[in-house]
Length: 340
Image: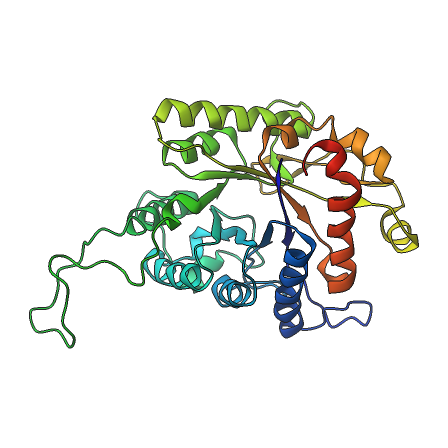
């Protein structure tokens, strides 16, 4: 059995070819798709966060709204760029959204990917400390967030407060028990996956990673997951970790599917550079009739290693079509692979 959810970047454009033409469309349709996915029996609704772009950005209003409109489905991010975050303010927002959702939040965080503007985090008031890189700053923000989410008091109370305080040092409120164990790190390298394991975070691995061995993408990703699990065991954590991978998977079951994704030009890994120094490997997409998909996906080593699969969806094609994409995988593919 696998947990199966969707991952939306929430793209929007005023183009007449898009069914998501404004930020309002992207947000409201994200809520509608989460509701539809829950009704179809999917397990998760996840959203990507990008700043300075026509995509989903500030996640917590959306997560809270989805939490209020659904009752069972996991609600998460993949991922929040921690270079931009005030970790204490984030802890407040996350605690509130998790309480609204009844403890269903699954927050994916990371160092982030290349953004739309130069050093965009500076515009958000974030600055690396002396001797830090922006990646160091992101990991520092993450560690502060993890500490705050433990729910332990750390702030000295005012002796003359406006409202009565509980005894002792104060913590960030609202606090949601258990959220600390539902934080995931989006790792592009094996080293950061190992670092996440040591800190007790779950692992998210996307459709790209650092090209560290030259092997096929799914093999490198499986190796990353195994290194993460080994580091988790060595750290002695009491619980079992969770691991997710993302994939673009389309079952061609009707003429719309064949028109959109039947071209057959996305079936190989690609190599590129996400910045001046980092050579990355981008995983292939899957688009085929269900019987072919089943055969192909059975050979994907990383999917086999993960407990959670996030299906990246083409959100600009509208809620109805994306619900169809999710349903086709749940109905025609997942049972044959033992995922359902």
